[in-house]
Image 1: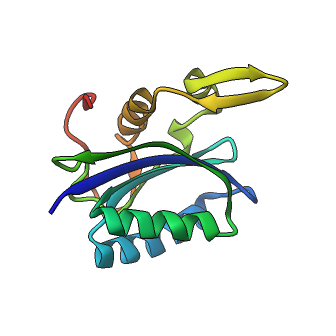
Image 2: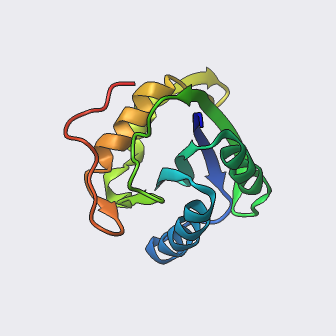
Length: 151
C-alpha cells in the first residue's frame, strides 16, 4: 500500500488556546487511528500547520473534512506527494508546543507578494522546521529521529 504525505496551512477562524488545541488533538488522534493516518499539527499567529501521512484516500478524506471545518479558512495545500515511509510512524497526531512556533521564526517561510499579501514557500524547509519544533510535543512521549529529517 502506497503512502501519501500532505502539508497544508490554514487560517484559524477564532483564536486557539492550549485547551482548544488539545481537544482538537484528542479527536484527531481517534480519527487518525481509525483511518491509518499519522501526523503533526502546529498553531501559531492564527494559523494551523499540519502534515498528514497515510493512505492517499484517507489523507484526501481528512483534508476534505478540514476544508469544511468551520475552525479553518483559507486552506492552502503546500505539498502533496507519494512517499515510501512515514516521518512519524508512531504519532496518531502530535501537537507542537505552541510556544516553540513563534510568528517571527515562521515569517522566514513567507514570500511577500505586496499589498500585505504573502504566500508560504519551500514546503520542505517549513516541514523540517516543524519537525525540529516537535522536539517538544504535547501528548504521549515520543520524539522524532535525532536531528533534522531531510526530505
